[in-house]
Length: 113
Length: 114
Image 1 (tube, rainbow over the protein chains, first blue to last red):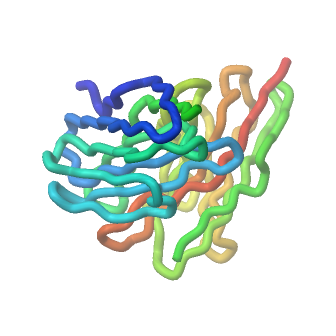
Image 2 (image 1 turned 60 degrees about the vertical axis):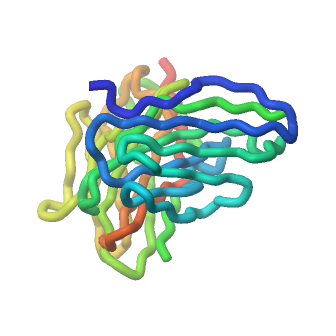
Image 3 (image 1 turned 180 degrees about the vertical axis):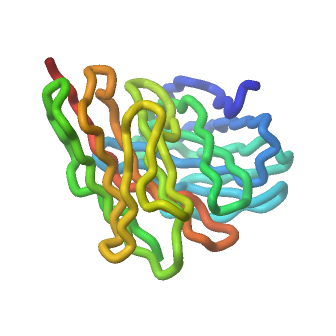
């Protein structure tokens, strides 16, 4: 059981470039999330999905887009990267029941220069 | 809306000393409460969670947390810390409402030295 797998683990982008971060889970979870982690800011929710084909905005959605075409995958896109998007990105997944915890991937460290 | 406040950003302690990491939350609906731990350069791992029942929750590695509904707190404690407990600790809440996500505090860095 791999759990939650994020690809890539590291990436350096130039300002204005685009990229997609891939999250895959093999636990048959309905809910999936993208967070960003910045020093002193904790984890802030970017977007999340409560099921295949559905997405919702979180606390800091601007500059990002997401897609959930398959239940096991949740993609995070940056159309035109900015230095302010330099961060560590974490994907997580969970069952719908509110009393269940989320399982996290190992993170993607993104630097925008 | 919900929010989580971790009252200390950094907590330095000596090995074998007790420690308390404080967490307060606010919410207009009932919530489920979680503590996660993040070791350097790793993802987050669940440490413990409060769902219902006894207000004292224990983890397998000696941590415990007490839910206090009147004070809306969920403080994490350990009576004797080890060097290996050095990590960042996150308090999180999940509203008891369909279609919502985990909301995290800003984290507390626990540094244990000898």
